[in-house]
Length: 138
Image (cartoon, rainbow, N blue to C red; front, side):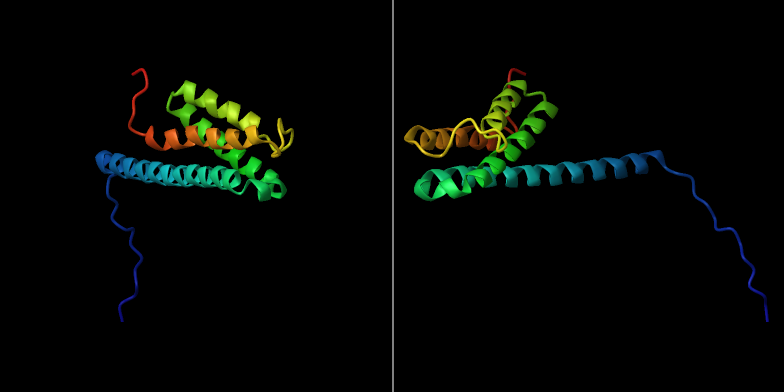
């Protein structure tokens, strides 16, 4: 019987190009995942705003839910626009986040102008879905 002799495995040197390609692949996958989650959040906010405007008489009990949804979506889009250097869009979404703050609301879901406001506030989110490849003042 031959005894099992432990041997040090053969090591290979790290190829820098392979490493950089692997890192780039991971970053690209992370960016795609971030874009998909953000697009889903934008669509959820648009659906929430338009459904609250359409079902106006029944929206009052769910006012906090709509405020939280729009506020969180506005903060997420604001962060994305800050990261991409679109400061005008960031300021628009910062105003929306403050306007739909669920802790200290500026308005209640009670009048006709608030219904029009909900529809108007969906427009920046719709525009943000199309801005991905658009250069602003580039």
